[in-house]
Amino acid sequence: MNKSVTIDREGLNQLIIVLGGMGFQVVGPTVRDEAIVYEKLGSIKDLPEGFTDEQDGGIYRLKRRQDQSLFGYAVGPHSWKKFLHPPERRLWQADSEGSDFEIKPEKLDTTKFAFIGVRSCEMHAIAIQDKVFINDKFVDPVYQVRRENAFFVAVNCGQAGGTCFCVSMNTGPKVEAGFDLALTEVLENDRHYFVVEVGSKKGEACVKQMTHQQAQKEEIAQAENVVKETAGQMGRSLNTTDIKGLLYENLEHPRWDDIAERCLSCANCTMVCPTCFCSTVEDVTDITGTHAERWQKWDSCFTMDFTYLHGGEVRASTKSRYRQWLTHKLASWQDQFGSSGCVGCGRCITWCPPGIDFTEEVPKIRDSETQSLKMS
Amino acid sequence: MARKLKPKVAVWKFASCDGCQLSLLDCEDELLAVSQEIEIAHFPEASREVIKGPYDLSLVEGSITTPHDAERIHKIRRSSKSLITIGACATAGGIQALRNFKDVNEFVSIVYATPEYIDTLQKSTPISEHIKVDFELRGCPIDKMQLVEVISAFINGRKPNTPAHSTCIECKRRGTVCVMVAQGKMCMGPVTHAGCGALCPTYNRGCYGCFGPQETTNAGSLSSQLKRMGADDEEIVRTFRGFNAYAEPFRKESELHDKENH
Image (tube, rainbow over all chains, first blue to last red; front, side, top):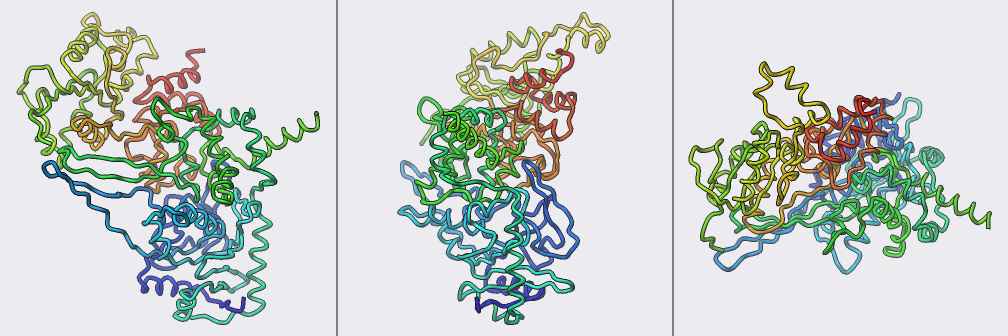
């Protein structure tokens, strides 16, 4: 990595301003309503300086740190999919005149986003959504244009969250690909700096407009150390050995009933998941009946409408819906898209109100299988 | 698509606060368009003019609390082609259904100077316990845009878009941070029917459950979670006994935690 440079806090501030000047809408982590969310950034003042989070099943608490770090926390309730795959959007409108009608296609919103602080698990999640939205025969034009226009400033995690398990899923904590710039935040004694790895020509062009130094060997070593330490702090872990076979063979396991007793069918896990991509389509008319609109909205496999066919719902029980979600995420996703659907970000654990944690549930199924093998 | 006659719409009131039917007058921007598409034939809050039935659509607000109302609703049903209930009173018995958990005669004897003048039923019940209802619009009060949507759907002969999933989905779509997970606030959102656009959580309050139970309510799990957050049985009873206290999943859950039942 001879392309590494270092910048200080002012350099990072310049990056935000430079990106703004290049026509990007700069978005990234900021504190709002007791959490770190992804929203518009004007300068480094908007970043969650000196904040961190504590996370566990169903619990997220914003806390103060002892230092002035700008990225000293794990992922929060938002993910970048809200920018690349907007939660609600109009697809087209139609107006009728006499017996005829005219369809007005929606103007493509070509907002260029610069994402600041994208974590390794999130880069992987975006790569997974790419397979769904653009890498196949059917392309989502909004996702495509936003994805192609986006500028990625990744951040190597300096701290793992209580529900993180990217190490188990091979998705982090070090950012490997897909970024324009990748930062590692280093705080040592009185010095606060970022080692910046340049990942693209666009990234290089940005660096040229920022105050920067060539990174020294020791600085690079420090940065590598930060990531190594994070990898050792994972709040959760998951044994993924033949997880597909394990789940496929245990579709009638009693543990699913146990989970269903706790599951609220509220859909929070799917909404916060950075790879869940399902949406529904609503057709509406105005009261005159001469104007119609089609809207696409985030949907979830936990709603009844999701599998409603003539005569009723295919998955009427909570048990069947939870099982469907988890087996899709960890098993049939592999058949469908060639990778796991889980990146180990832990959001589905933290933001589940009763704190259902599949890193606890899957081992329960695995253990009972091991036991029954021993008995037979 | 020329329509020969405007559909005749009637608005009826039972035991309620009028808030839901006033949502129709509150439509402001949409009111002109609405009044051009429908004939308001019976709506005493808006006009003294009353056009005789039968009606194409009746919007019914309020719950059944008196023997007289229990008869009146049947007459309204007979004169209405379609009948839609609006609001928590008409759909679940309303806040006045709190009396269903006590002896109403005791209230009557304490509240009224001459209790013998009071002719009331033991329970406040939803309209659907008395007659066939074509559609129930949730909320306390209803959301005016949902009301316009339901009327538009009725006029245009289509299904209204009023999803029955949890309020959490509305929070997440608008980017609201979960107040229960991030702040430890009690919130009915996970068991509550969507429709308000997640109003309270967006203003940093827990959901009060104004829209009643969602399609697959797991009230027991929410109670367990509220207990873990420090709530006692009394608080859980109060949480479930709001505007939709008599809606079955909420009623059953509050009864499980109500000491008077044990």
